[in-house]
Image 1 (cartoon, one colour):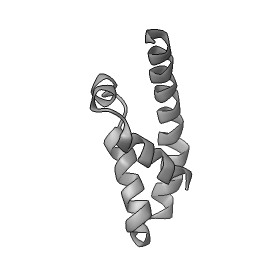
Image 2 (cartoon, helix red, strand yellow):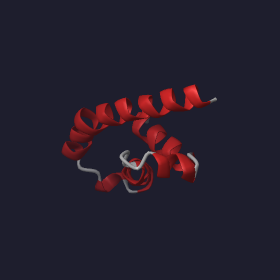
Image 3 (cartoon, helix red, strand yellow):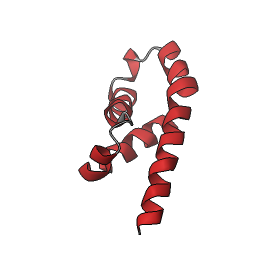
Length: 74
């Protein structure tokens, strides 16, 4: 469910935020959500495991930077 939530949140971010933070794979996040929600039978558990252990920690650090920058700009 957490991966679904990450993907859903990535989908609703403004285009400006996504464009200004292109190093984050927003599309990968949202596509994961779509597959997990609608084509879950095609998910490979090894791929999910790798994403949770490799991609999600990277996303977390990158998103923390985005939040920090936006907090300083408001």
